[in-house]
Amino acid sequence: MHNVGAKERIELVRGNRNVDRKVNNMCEANAYIRSGQQEELILENVDRIIPVGDGLLLEDIFGHRKHIKARIQELSLVDHKIYLEKLED
Image 1 (spheres, rainbow, N blue to C red):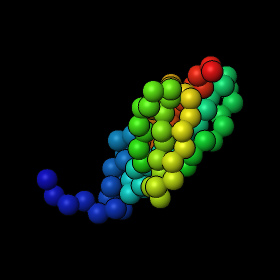
Image 2 (image 1 turned 45 degrees about the vertical axis):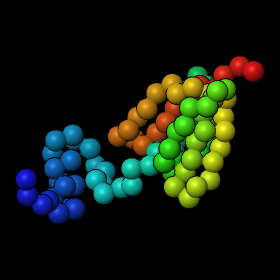
Image 3 (image 1 turned 120 degrees about the vertical axis):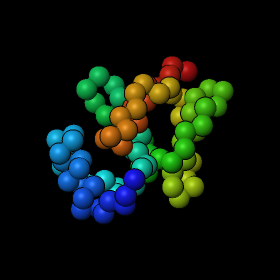
């Protein structure tokens, strides 16, 4: 496999997936609570999700942590989004 430059990678993405986004973006995602059609941003630049007894521990790239009583509803990796569903107390 040969090295492909950033410009070439962007063109590959455009050609293969018919999308207009940069390939060299960070891999982190933003976490949202989804309720119906509403999305509430919980934490940006999430690097790790750690299951804990009563929910999830989210950690961003700066080491900030947020504990939330929720479960993962959906991961949209291409869009860099994590959708969570809040759990009842």
